[in-house]
Length: 121
Image 1: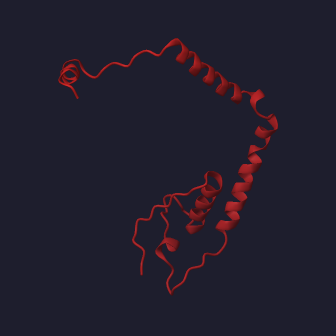
Image 2: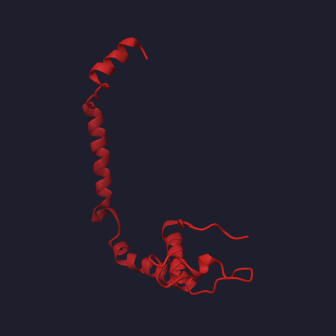
Image 3: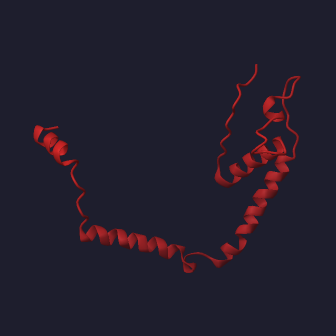
């Protein structure tokens, strides 16, 4: 950094942003218009909006079916995470936790599970 620039930024603050040129503004405005045009009813099928609930219902039914399946673990004692998920978030036990994990995996492609205790053995 030169001394001139250092003194300039120290005394007057960082340099100001310059205004965009007309061509840049028009380009961005055109892209924004194309984006919004794709979201209007002419940009997608009205039948799609009628069937969104079907996909959500399928997600819910699959997650419910998997959540009701028995858990399998090895050892003599039931692990703490099976017996005691957070009752504030999952009042009905591990079934609700499994439902939330499966639904998140199917809908968003990931699930985030936070463990508050260290695993045994």
